[in-house]
Length: 139
Length: 402
Image 1: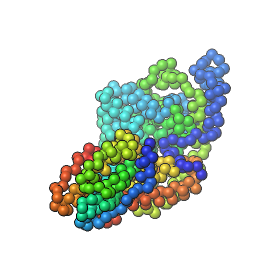
Image 2: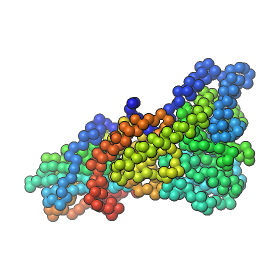
Image 3: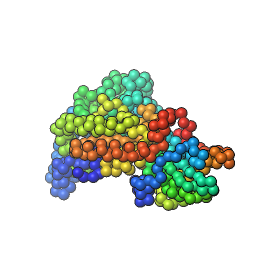
Image 4: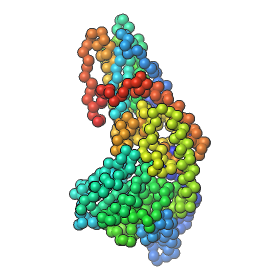
């Protein structure tokens, strides 16, 4: 397996591992993926009164690239507004970590996790309807 | 201790130095073509090839005339299954195999399906072993060939091939056995075991890669159609210049295996059990496949809530293989574990440890310690572990699969 140095670095020293209280009003939780597909990401954001993401946590079941992708996005979302965080694209994640084509789905999952966390937060605050999840291709 | 520690002996084994030593003169000094009948170079090479044939035959208690050299197990399986199917197709076009065979058997069967043969793929039981009644039930009047492996490469379970061979003999069905993971590890006695065709290869038993053998029974006589045509070597069954040095290596490896496998097995089994007991300290560890009917060197376990590829990455100081094919281009979990009815999660979380004659107690202790630390670390990272610890039933969760 040819992992990039950045993947290995995040994998070996993952940032912001852990969990916030799901019930906390200032927390948005996104859980995406499925054990059957070999990866599940849980991403949580803590949002302050001005709508800025103050802190983030993740837990990921998956390959090294999935762990690195989620670790990376917890760093990226911090300090961003919900809108800016929602604009993070999987291509940026894949490029930053130099993911090989077979691992692009890990970056897609990380993008989905951010969106799911934002949606959850907005839903809690009556701001938005839940978005549809992408359909499964692996059974 | 040399890192990474090699615990992937079912993938391949190092060549025993005694084997390598025997091979070298046949590359430089005794380089003759065994098919050259007109001079001493050829005679010398031919003698070496025939001595080796004797050693390989002795390992499986066969007649040397029943041994045909191949390039390895993939060729052996292709030659046996296609060769028998093509030869006996006048009698019928039905073949029986099972879902946990090696790809060299399964893909050969797929190819025969394209040639208008019909194939039944049996499901093994949850322990990985084929049920004899289900096997019997799959037999049809037009069944011509059955192929069941001796030992599974992923989970190491031993199939009841001797009984299957009896059943096939009584029904006039040609029985082929892929014995690649059994030869040199288990006693194979073809005077008692009624297999008609049997595939073995050198590089799983401390011999070189690129050389294998197909056993083709003479009493009662079994016929196959050649798949490679040319100079009529190996009595027309497999043309191609014989690689003398490889054959000499295989012969020596077979000779040593016959002498030493009983002692090696006992030691390897002890180490395997030590490894299993060590990692069983962890919660939610599942052994895949039957533990009783299993070769001594294999341990295939699933560490629930930890994904196999990330675990392999974490334990990179030990060289193992993952049942999760995330390591390859496809993202499918192991088809063998799926056939056993293992959940996708457990199939994705599996690691195959295979020990061999050079494995030491020190290496096993190192491996146990490393695995325990890394599994715990990855579980700290795992949302599934967190949910399990909170008492959430993961099967009740509606996953947004991707």
